[in-house]
Length: 161
Image (cartoon, rainbow, N blue to C red; front, top):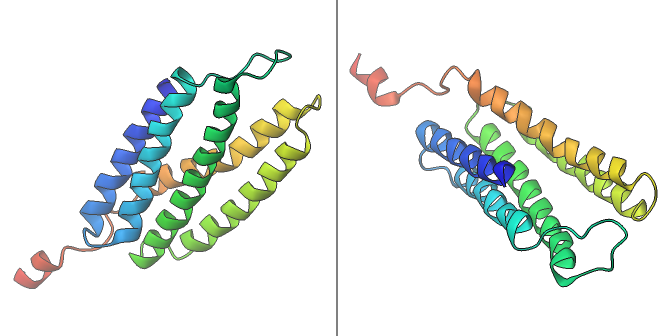
């Protein structure tokens, strides 16, 4: 639950950053909203649809937990692509779009690795590896935003001086 709430907060932070830097650019705004949606959907996996205990018969909430994690993965990859495109479009980072595309590609491979190991003794490890792929992208995004030189110069101030 805490993780889901932190995702929402981080998404709001991304949204504020995007609006401050390029208020009319849609890809960054939509990418931030997808991040917020990812957090909101994650709340349901912690509350309404908990994961079934290992070795117990599948339940409806447990099956929904797995389906919702698929939705979260799609939201995550969409957010990566849109925010990476926004960084490129706003001329903040030339490699962000390519990096995001590569991360989504590796995420898809990681999801395949996880699915191939469903039920095996290394399933948990495969799940963690797949999850870390998205976490490293989020870390890089947060560092990029934290160390930004506040991006593009304000054109209204540039003209008046």
